[in-house]
Image (cartoon, rainbow, N blue to C red; front, side, top):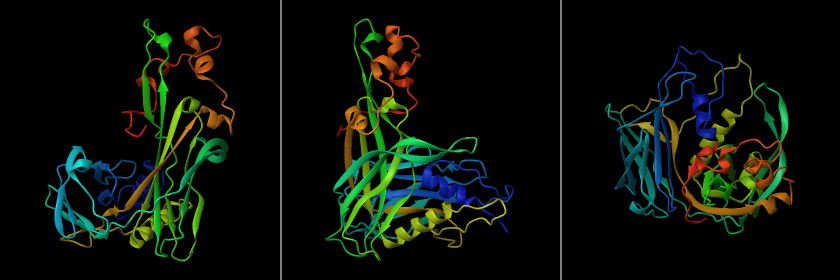
Length: 358
């Protein structure tokens, strides 16, 4: 029987990284992987297409596909490929309609045609507030040891009093910060303010169902965390953005099963976890296994701004920008050269354009 590295792909979908799991590496089924989100935000719609190859090999982007967005069974827009395997509809070219049913039709250049099941774009549920606090988390080092690390934890509060019991939520989040270069770097004493996205945040799958709970309020639901190191991300302004997504029960069950599979702790002798069925199928061959999910989610964004004083109120930062990180510019004893004091591109984190909401 052929075995597919489903767990590897599930971990890609959940965390964006590969973890080593043992199985027969010579028996591989190539599968289409679809990662798509249809929402109501003033942001581009994005579809990512790839195909599994072999164990230890990242999925290969699938290019030159025709992807059509349908709204209530009527053609709404076509996605344009922006980079290999990534397809987008610009925010200005699409206006979603709450209560409408959306699905995708994907036509590959090899003749394969795929389609997702229609899902309703539900009205979003707004979050009330976000909290940031310093705390401890376990981290597994490269040598397999577990250690405690200081992290910043983001939690969300949401009132559910007027919500129905068939409420299903999912959360995504991101972390961005700014850093201003030092005037000592140029003879004219000029500075540049740079903006960065912290890609080293936790990517655990966070979902919630009110079907059986009947809660009136969600208090302090942890949606993610990031290491406080490197501390320079907290020297100036740091923003957290949390997207609270209202999803269907079918989507909730899919992500719950995906999470359960990815969290299994076994040995090298345990069987490969079962394939998790999404909402995408091959129109001509419904027995073909397609990985991923076309998520339709009524979404709301809430942001929290913190600065060095907010962090220091809970955690004493061990360094400063002027005296420690960039102290080498003034000849401070023991200071180590850090190019980011002068150049944005010297940081490990990717540079981004200044967001409109900053």
